[in-house]
Image 1 (cartoon, rainbow, N blue to C red):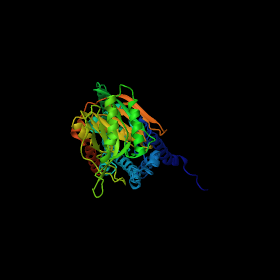
Image 2 (tube, helix red, strand yellow):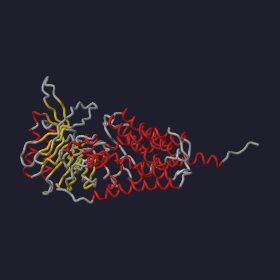
Image 3 (spheres, rainbow, N blue to C red):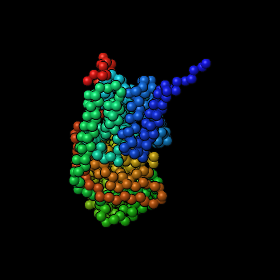
Image 4 (cartoon, rainbow, N blue to C red):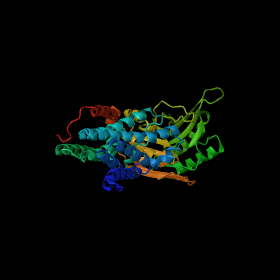
Length: 491
């Protein structure tokens, strides 16, 4: 008679991997992407890391990679149809992150089964963080879509960015579930569990305590800032054309109608277009509004310079600051221009609002890279004014990336996005004003008191020491994996 399948054995072998896969996938889907629930990001890695301590490598590693890949389906449509991220890079991001998470689970398991539970808890997030940092440095699109951008609902955790950069937040989000999964691993001696619990708790408590203390700092001098976006207007209409002239007039009228206490208006990236020979046609009407209403104005302009016949001209994505006191406008040319078919030339100079050295200019994509934010903070900037465009799908995530970049360097941020989210945040990550550019045909305006930040931070002065330390720790952990095993039941 043919024997029946061993149901308990089948259940023990198949049910835990499927459960872990389903749980981590669902939690990653809800805890990452463009509308994340912050607390779920901390829980999402736990099921697959818990599984890694209880099953074979051949099961744990594929489950981890698949969970990440399926969990990231909340962003597939964006990455696979993005102007800013070329398709080969988009596919590399999706598959690369899944592979890296699988490798992180492998390292975690390899250390736990060797009785190295504290190194496992410390090294697994270090591998993820260090590798993500190195990949970001090599990527032409910079750093996008990291776990750090999921934490706006938990600003106390974000304060770590002022010491470690956003990479400390990236590490912490993975360290906590790794620490819990490690101390719950089977067949461990009591002293090992106590040490793992103590270290995990201490790091979390110190981080949150530091964050709460930092957020209690009094605000700096404030400006009443208005973000003004005509989302339905064309991209960079030339002011020498009828369309551009009408768009300029509409913006000027909208600025003039702002509440009397507004003293700074920030318009979006590509609000207007101009040639250097006709730039006065743009700055003239805005300067008139600025002086009459005592409002400093920052406007995003696509600017063509030296573009006559055989002149070897250049096309710049700029932010132009028009001061209320009648001084000459100042032009910032974007440092991190997207050259993906745009034929843009990159700028190199730092630019501040004339007469206000603490107010720095930037443009959208600059937040994907450490500079110019770090250079601005070193020079005394305390508020970052950024015309932006964005894509509708990733708009809030990109604005949050800008918030973290500003926080790293002790600056508040004004983010005026043509297609995305209008965002005003202080230097501690608190959202003071937010709206969506809804393309309804009218203007979208956000007004709030925006205090200057404290300025240059420990991170500003020391740079990316933390992710480099993570890379070194991960390398040491790989060496430890191949060291002689010790008895897991020992102290």
